[in-house]
Amino acid sequence: MPLQGHGGDGEPVNHIDPEAEAEFNSGYDYYQGKGVGLGYRFSAAVGTVLARIEAQPQLHQVVFKYVRRAVVKGCPYCIYYREEAT
Image (tube, rainbow, N blue to C red; front, side):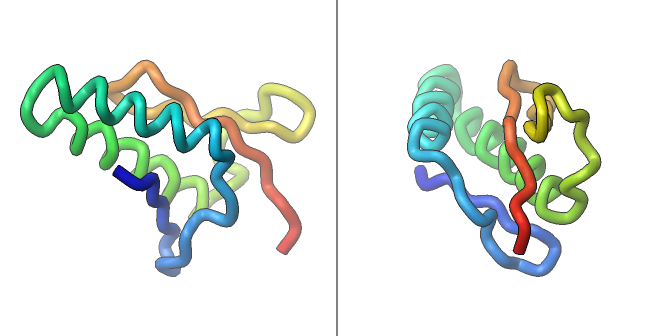
C-alpha cells in the first residue's frame, strides 16, 4: 500500500524518506496479517498524523535539533520530521 499523507489543502507531504516508506509498508503488512482491516486502520492512523503535520507543522515536540516527533495513536510508531522552507 503506498504511503499517502495530505494536509488541509489536499497537497501531499513534501518528501517521505524511502526507508520510512518501507517501514510503513512493513507495518501495514504486519497489521493486515493480524486481522481483517487492521492494516487499513494503521494506514488511516498514519495518514491522520501526516495531515496534522501538514496543517500544524510546529505542533509536535522537537526531540533533536530541528527534528520533531509525532506519535501515531494506537500503534507503536512515531513519525520523525523536520520543516523545510517553502
